[in-house]
Image (cartoon, rainbow, N blue to C red; front, top):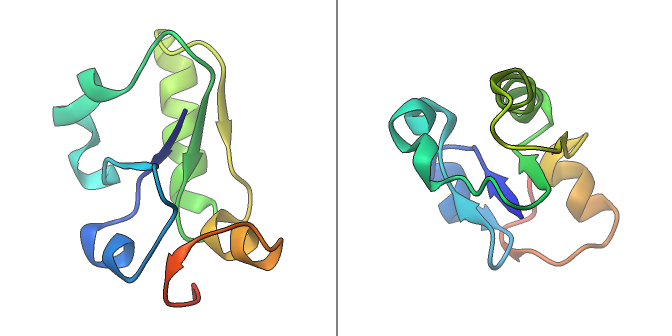
Length: 89
């Protein structure tokens, strides 16, 4: 499972199909939406916010294996992985 923790405007501009958006600014209020029964990867623009969220979820201990997608959607696109919208910047 992958979650995107960028803000709505960032997601509207560039997104990965099928990846749920739970902005970091809304994380605490939406924590129950994050699956606890599967490995989890966290995505943001460059990997900084997603690293903080991955560290938090790992420390909380309820979400099992949590990984940061290093380099974020910028690296995702640079690797030629599919995305929709504008090229990430």
